[in-house]
Length: 358
Image 1 (tube, rainbow, N blue to C red):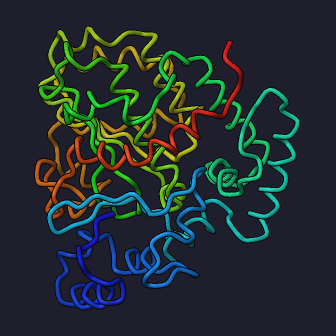
Image 2 (cartoon, rainbow, N blue to C red):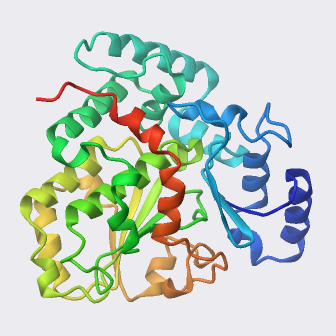
């Protein structure tokens, strides 16, 4: 989320409303007027409050929401209530109503009580909703997702051990992973992974790339809007070399696919492959045997065809390098790391739950 610096929320809402009417190019730059106003003014949150309901989605208490200043802007997580439009998506696509939420939370809590070896924050309703939403509030499916999520972490404990932003500075310093500060036209987060000419494979391992992706998606899972709308991923393979393709192995490919298909409590709506050279086929051949039809159907290959990409993502949501006209400055890996490190305590809490180590 990017907001202008030094303005009250009431004043900012007025400015945005005026700009929305007079300047169409700002519509996606700030997502949409309703998106922004709703996230600024959730029920029970007054114009001078910086905490309130925003704490509910987190496992730890914070005196103030983590944020960093970027010139004239402030970058922060969107932990407030979803907009009216996103709430409607939740109702239509996830069956989300007050009664179904209440029933789902109660039933999932009871199911998890029967898991004696699993340590998890049972009394945290927002945490339970985090797993219910991608399962459309079916408690049995949510239970399976919780099991898969923690079983995956247990199986790959060498990767997840002490995983938090302050321990992963290298991947962010190389600036090959970023999340755009805006969302797409459907309210989805946009993660960009550049594994071509910008990737110095002798300095950054694929395990580090995976850890960085986990940190981003764990942060997205704290956001109610992201829980509902989901996320999309852009793999930019421009300049991929033969040496880089040799870094990919079948075990790594299986881990990534297992994670995406079974162990991520977030709706991954599409994976877009752009700027891929011919040798990328060697890489994809490693992943293909592990893909089930649902995920396979969501992987779209665009090459350098920007019109193809724009069929799925509005140019208003994309930077110039992808044929877009987004005017918000791109957030660098180091800037994201600065923000994520303010949540180290939250990641410690996330790491404190799960199955016992084998």
